[in-house]
Amino acid sequence: MNEFLERIEDFIVYLRIDKKYSENTIEAYHHDLMRYYKYVNEVEHKDFSAIKKKEIKNYLKYLNDSGLDQRTVSRNISSIRSFYKFLLIEKYIKTNPSDLLELPKRKKTLPKVLSMEEIDRLLDIPLTDPYSYRNKAMLELMYATGLRVSELMNLKIHDVDLSMAYVRTVGKGGKERVIPIGDIALEALKSYMEEYRSLLLKGKVTDALFLNNHGVGMTRQGFFKILKKLAKEKNIKTPFSPHTLRHSFATHLLNNGADLRSIQELLGHSDISTTQIYTHISNQRLKENYQNFHPHAKEMRDHDDIK
Image (tube, rainbow, N blue to C red; front, side, top):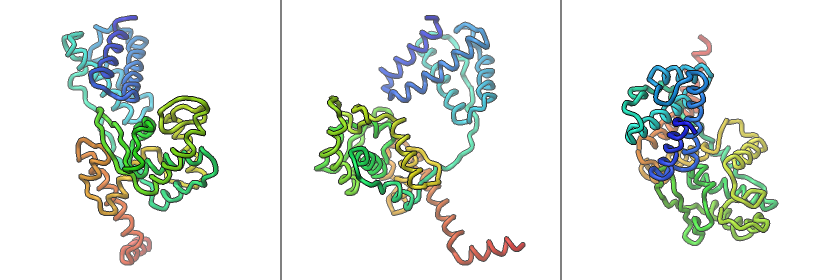
């Protein structure tokens, strides 16, 4: 293994042991740095110690020219900057070639949110077999708690307390939080855990809460496939991902009177400024409702159309 690859592996160990990052985060860092290594090795033909700021800027131009969106480019820059900071701290390098490297300005867009009517349609799952009971429990729990999809997939059976109606999860940075579970989600979870989960085990032994058709823990990809299939069946046109359920959870709470600080605690945000995005979504929806339903707003629109 050459020096560049060795340093990447050292960095990954640091993220796993010292920073205690989740495997999904570590995988993203590794993917970004291997892409960077491949470029430097095959395009720039540079050794690890010979890389300067010029080569990194060339790489960023290469990423932009590849048609990647700004979010992906920004993430790659962040990965490279973190990598070189680690190398400097560990004295593998004397100067940081990524120093003062700026993240591209991203266009700020509000996350997509499903309406209450769309949520009701999505969660209206006919209960006919163990898989439908599992799907009902997963989606009800996600919408009731605002869990990230990675947190949902990592749940173990002992993380759920049906008698006390709460779920315990470990989020970003190893931060643990306890979230109450509402009655509808609790009933769906109880049915799945007490009557149907054992039927999905197929002789396997695992403490994973949600199981796939092989009797092992559900994956993010598997969950997304289920979600897309249900959305198609329910004729939901709003483009969304598993994270949209988390956005919908927070926005619907805010719209129904919950305070921002409580939502921050439920979501596990370390900074309330992250949670404030839902205020913008709520305000946007309020403006849309005003434009659509206020009689004078409608008259103004009609007048503009005549012009």
